[in-house]
Length: 67
Image 1 (tube, rainbow, N blue to C red):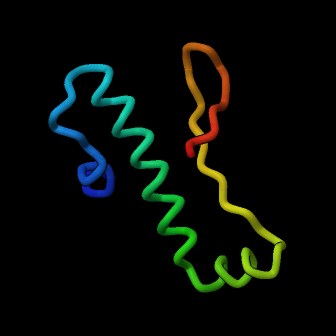
Image 2: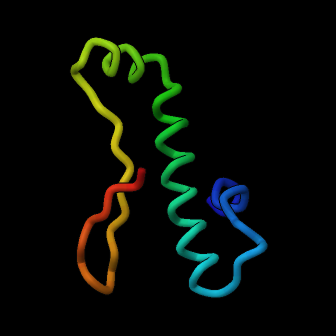
């Protein structure tokens, strides 16, 4: 799992900013990997499926869509 998260790390950031950016980038990367799956792509093209990345914020208990 760490090997999949490591590319999302921004080493120019520190502390909470680094964690926040890594989580957001990880969501984007996972969404892109799923969008590249042929079986899922066909469903997206025919309008039966949409890929949405989101984050659940533990402190606020809100779900935020990742652009």
